[in-house]
Length: 430
Image (cartoon, rainbow, N blue to C red):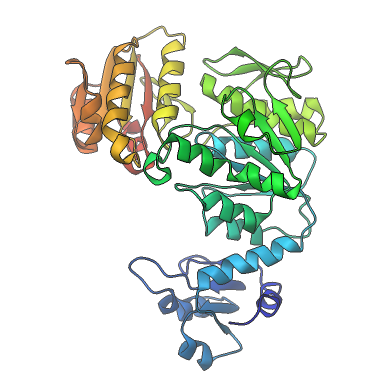
């Protein structure tokens, strides 16, 4: 493989980096990554034909056919990561790394809204937060950007460490430590150890940690970081207070400013407080912070308040784990309501051996909450169906059939499940 400097020279001649030959390839540097059932090099000629300027492939013979356009790399993914790290080393701007069990994507979007009031910000688009997405995010940062926000996802220990070494964040925020990806992390202690790899990187490099003191685990995990900015408790750097959780979150900021957000659920208070603290640290005027928080409208099935022709729906179907499910249910139960409340819940994935116990615990929680109708969808949700009045469906199709036969009207409805369940497709039926 060519060294990073030679590949970087090619990168600087391109408008973008691509790993998907189906996308627009005009003047791109295409990395032919391999998948579980395909060989990336098979798509490289197609990418070049569609306008890619160069392609990185792991086929030495193919690369030799046109050295002007092909670069050989034994491992194109490693080459992508090394290129991204090399590019990161050329940047002198603040880079904020974000991870956590719940709320990291919403917090990232809020941070972007706040910081964009003062800076030219590049940030993780969509869910590009893994060992491929983080390098792509880094390579999308250009000379015009004054600050970057890099979301880091993980489902096992060591991933955040890898992503931190690639992105070299100067600042870091862990939203919370909850029960997500229990199977990969090996339990709650593994989750705390894995997520805190971001803080350990900051401690070793002299970075700054934004610490959510409302999460009992995080202050202890941040003790080795010299530079800390805390929120939202009264004695913290930037306190905040939750005034109302529904129908929309209303909070008071550190200087007394009251903000009504377009987002529902008390669990989103900490995401809003985090964005306010980071914005204040980077000297965004409070009026701009408040306007950004008030103007943010959630998308992508995350805490969206949707009014259908018959019902009011809290659509939170992007993902689910025991911590986020419990927070969503207790928040939904506390919402003021004129009509009956209905919950439609899907399986929580990646819980491993803890799945049965965690779904049963969810059922026990549901039994204590005042919901008129409980619909549970998925194989593992059978363990949450502890009450005879709970409706359990093995498949989403069965749930859809029930909703068609029993139309809901004048209800408040919560829809939540893991991404693989795709429960947002039930929205037209409510």
